[in-house]
Length: 198
Image 1 (cartoon, rainbow, N blue to C red):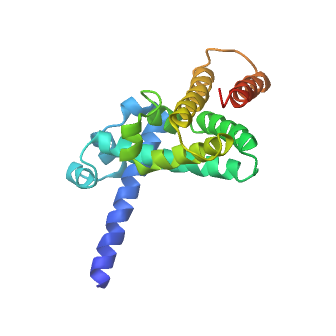
Image 2: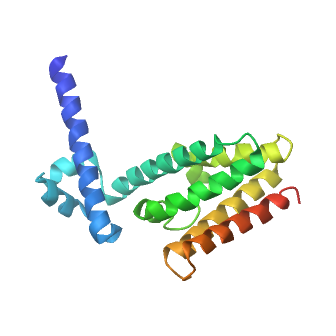
């Protein structure tokens, strides 16, 4: 039993070392520079050891996506817990989302490389679904407690607002100072909430 536990612990440590190396390469050189070979060289593992944990670079990316959505979901939950009012919850979630995008750029870019995930992707990756559920629960409260096609529409509109504003500011298409960016975000969310039942 002790031998099995030791092997499992060693395997987990190897996996974490691989992810840490991938993270280090990503932070220094960007995601396109990450490769199985580079990871193996950085931590002194053979290629088969790395492939034993991750089939390919896409599998490592999926692990980053999962972890990123855990971080984003935790930030959204913490923001939501600050108020019982669903409209205020959406405002706080919006700010937390925006802050996450700017403070975790590398995760955000991997998580949303191709835009907002579709419903099928959210069903496949539980962490994406969890984040969506946090927003949907506040939307349902504002719309009388039931999930309707209108709730789904408003969910996608809300997420699109957050994603669009975060992405625009991330790539510096605007030279607006941080305070103005926050006001734009708050204005967009306030307008969204005022029209929630339209």
